[in-house]
Amino acid sequence: MRRTVSDIRSMKTEGKKISMLTAYDASMARLLESCGVVDMFLVGDSLGMVMLGYDSTVPVTMEEMLHHAKAVRRGAPDAFIVGDMPFGAYQTSARDAVFNGMRFMKEAGCDAVKLEGGLVMCGVVRALVDAGISVMAHIGLTPQTAGQLGGYKVQGKGLDAARRLLAEARGLEEAGAFAVVMECIPSGLAQVISRGISIPTIGIGAGVHCDGQVLVTHDLLGMFDKFIPKFVKKFSNLSPIIKRSIEEYGAEVKAGSFPGPEHGFADQGDYSQLLNE
Ligand code: KIV
Image (cartoon, rainbow, N blue to C red):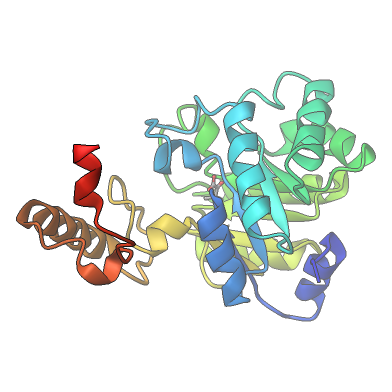
């Protein structure tokens, strides 16, 4: 049965760790769902870099996000899916945010949306929640505005910055967010914030004391080597395996050893006479 926002929230109160992974297409979504250990699927705007070859998440559009979110829903009909609001889909006004949030729910069948930003986004979060759209917040390193933060750097360094992050997490909880992603912040600070709010914290580069963890699936599988952040653990290294398989395929095609008879279909007559007809 599909999880709900209240199931996710109760996992924190019950002390159960929450696992979230990215999914961008139906075949990966099907695989993740079959494992039965992933509590939330994130159709992250990281797909811009991982799947679409952009240099950052900034160019990603609503149409691209919806295209992938629909595929993930088709691949994992029972998963709890969070659609990531792309840059420009929610910063312009609460009205735009609600319009685009609705598209994730109605067109792609998402269960919730995620958006980046702290106190400045509380009004937008409130508007979405009032419109019936569940919101996961995202603070710390927010890749859509990494330029303003001085690049892809650890956030919350120093007590003032740490205080600000705690205030942001509290403000977002108050505004109605059901969970908050915390990216690239010191582990001790993540622990304090996790204790200081009642909604689940989902860490990425935020240490083990968060209520849950999220990673980009292609990173943990070793399938995206362009940029590997410190917080990534490669649970597999699939790139060389994929490369070797493709090289073998190419070599066998060129040598005429693939396909073998076992990959074909039995002849049903003498076809050579067709050329003389
Ligand atoms: O877009 C994404 O994949 C994300 C996660 C890394 C949190 O925002």
